[in-house]
Image (tube, rainbow, N blue to C red; front, side, top):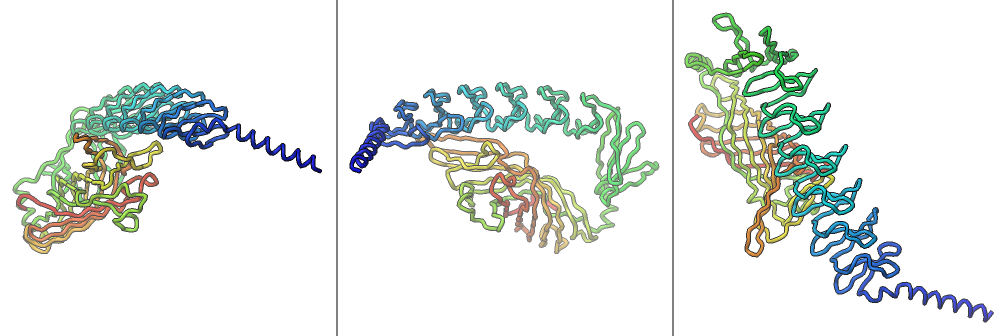
Length: 518
């Protein structure tokens, strides 16, 4: 019995000595952590490295942080505020010079340096330079890129085979994609060759090899090579159809469009009281509008007494913000990076075009629509800026240096449809109230950061979509008396794409100015 107890005692003693000796090499370090079987994160003199269970140094103690092993065996490190990658052989495969390194996928990883995105391969070579504001995921060997607000494509070799010079590139269909360059539309093929030059104001989608286009204000039809052809657009009860060779016109059956005959028995189309003239020039058709003559104006004036004119054309200046789905101005803690400096979040609109429809002979009841341009400046109160991550989600990014200005600016084309009631025959001096709907289409957006570093001012301006919705709609009101005019807008569609960013709804309120005589 005594011999058995002695043997057990010797066994446990030797086991303890062995266990102690197996980690004895770690005693030279200030701290250590076992992060995986056989690998230890170690600290010496405030710097971190990595060793294996044999004491071999995989990563020297010269880093601010060393992360756990990735699935592919790489280890991310932070050195002097920059990220790099080591492999288990102790080789630094990606130098520590990046602000962000994403996970490898298909042998390549997205990287971020100085606010610009690129790609590295598994050897650490930067085969796509960090020159881009955004690079979308690779699909079928190609990825869309954004540089200086312009779009292009790169392949897996890093070659920008479609130059980043287009304002927009639509999805490829049947081997071609519609593009927008310098405000004009065209088409490119999958090799990036412009098969139809960007010289059209608009091009519809191709149907049966033919597409309707607008060039220099003229409507024409082109084939898939961009050559003009004779064709007609099939029309229904609610369409306009032009058959060029036969000069047949079908007109929209709506109250705003009237078909009449002139003194020579020719059909005349009137749109909102103006004559629309359709003329042919070769294979194209041109539509022009002719204002009413003075005689026609006097006749209309006697008929209606006073023409209705709504309160829209002019300038709006106000404050903009956004609210949560429940209508709160205060954002949850996880959305604090979008907190606004409300006093500096300004909206400015130029409402240039207006069209009125009168509902009364007195001219004090009617509807109007129009076209405007609205700029929204969202000034953030925190030292963070919204960016889009590799998954397409809106996330915060910290700003280095002393913050001076931090904002997101959007530009939208706006079009209202308003009903207005005026309580006086004097347009300028009477009280009025207008309410209706408003739609908006995004034509641009950018962030701007101004910081101070050791007395030097630094500016950084980035263009992109920031997951903003291209189209939004909402409710709009206007009311005023004499020189006091106010407006308010609440958009019922979210500001950002669903599931990509916080669910917020834009609002604005301010003053309206209507220059000139009415």
